Every structure is written in C-alpha cells, then in structure tokens.
Image (cartoon, rainbow, N blue to C red; front, side, top):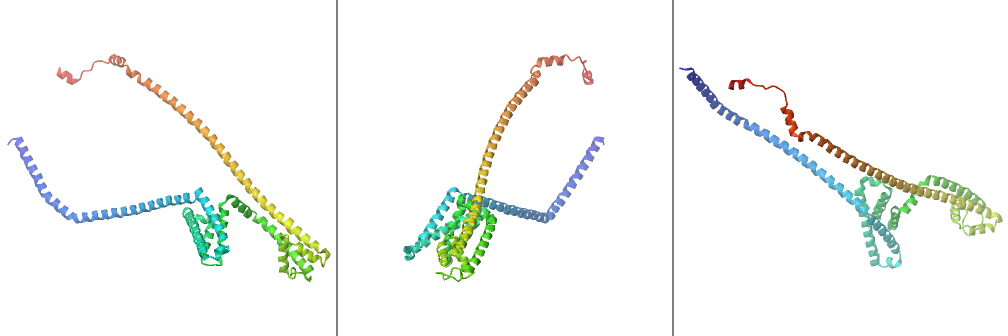
Length: 378
C-alpha cells in the first residue's frame, strides 16, 4: 500500500468520524432547542411586557407634555385676548354704560314698571357675565400670580360681591361700586390713587393733628356754649360738639356763630380760631402733601420717559457699531478669500508643469538595480 493510499484511507476515516459526530449532534441540538423553547418564550414575553410598559410610560409622558404645551398656548392666547387694547377699551365702555344704567334704574319710570325693571336687571346680568368672563381669562393667564396684582384682585372682589349680592335687595345697592373699576383701567386715575396711597404715612400724622385740634375745640365749645338756648343742641355733649365742629369744618359755621354771639359778643374768636386751624392750615397741609406726591409720580414718569429715550439712543449707537463691525467682518472675509486663492494658485503652479517633473525624475543618477529573479530569467 502506498503512502497516498494510506493518506486517502485516513482521510476517509476522518471524514466518516466527522459525519458520524455530525449525525449524532443534530438530534441532540434539536432536543436542546425543544427543551429551551418554554424558557425562551418566557424571556421573550418578559421582554415584550417590559417594552410595553416602557412604551406606555413614554406615551403617558408624551401626552402630559403635549397637554401642558397646549395649555401654555391656551394661556398665552387668553392673555393676548384679554389684554388687547380694543378689549380693554371695550371693558371700559361696558363699565361706563353699566354705571349709567344703574343710575337710570333709580328713576320712577323704571322702579314703577316691572317690565322695564326686568329689562334693566337682564342687561345688568349680561354686563356681570361679561365682567366675569374677563376676570376668568385674567385668572387663566396669570394663575395664582393674579393675587399679587392689586387692580386685578380689586376687580375680582367687586365681581364676586356682585354675584353674592344678586339675591339680597339691601346689598344690591352696592353694585354701583363696579364704577370703581374705572380706577384700575384709566391710567390717570390709577396714578392719582397711587399718589394717595403713597402719602398715607404723612397723611396719618396730619390726621392725628386734626383729631387733636377737634378734641381740644370740642371740649372748649362744650364748656363755653353748653348752657346757651340755641336752636339745636350744638354743644350740649362732647359727641354733639364733635359733630358740630365737623359740619363747621365744611365752612357752614356762620349761623351757629351768630347765635352764640347773641349771648356772648366774643363768641366769634373761638369759631375763627377753629376755622383757621382746621380749614386753612390742616387741609392746606393735606393738599400740599397730595400735590407733592402727584409731582413725584410725574417726575418718575418723566424719568422713565428719559430712560426710555436714553435706551433708544443707546440701541441706535449699538446698532451702528454692529453694522460697522459687520462691514469690517465682510471686508476681512473678502481679504481672506483673496489670500486663500493666491495661496492655492502658488501650490498648484509646480504640479501643472509635468515636463520639468519628468526631467527631474529621469535625471536621477541612481545605478541600475537587477534582482535575482531577473538573473534567473536571463
């Protein structure tokens, strides 16, 4: 037996053994596949369940994000709608019309005719619904930050009280306080009210001084004119004297003074002293304080206008500077483009002359090299 036959025999045995191993391993593999099928199905079910849970969570999160996004758009839409200048002017017009109609509703031709009175009540209810919708839109736009804005809180309180007072005949008269909403709508009135609130600390001191003057003169008038037989009980008690002094402060004091002067010729002196202190000094102090507050607000407005003008000038200057910088940038960019083109031309010029490159390569003085393969060929 030759070596080639032996090798062939060994090759045949090897291939046969491999085939046998393959025939044995195939059923085992199929069995293992059949045995591993339940566990693999369970794993697949677990994976599918986890994927479903994750997808549900992501879908729920996406729905919430879309909801809040739509709600934000809705809030901004409500804010743009309710704060539009035309809507604002329309609300002012409705307030004025409603106030005029509430005044007309007090006349006899309305109160004595149930049909006309019912029509007025219906129109008033329509105005109240409009004001309620406006406050609701403001609340949607501002949220709970609405309670940090005094004018909006005032409007909301007036509207809520109007709804609660709808069925109470006594409180219904207070619906006229809706007219005060004009204070929060008209800029001049709002500034005046702001000026009044800003001078409250100084007004409190002036009010204390006025009360002190009232008390001193009430005790004085009660002691001096208590027993005089006047037309009315002007100075019989301290409280009556205080009320009489309050009426006298409105400059209706001449009649009372003349009655007292019929019994005491010097009675004019305390009257003139009280009128001078209360009417000319104290009230002039109040007016001076209020005027000073209004002047301060006007100066603040002028400063705001001047600041706005300065900001506009500054913006114009910055715009001009930015335009100059952009112009310089464009010029610099054009210069860089030109330099890059020239540099590219300098780099490309040697490669465009292949004759010189070939001459340079052919002039290489290196000796001829012959390999061993070429020697064998020769």
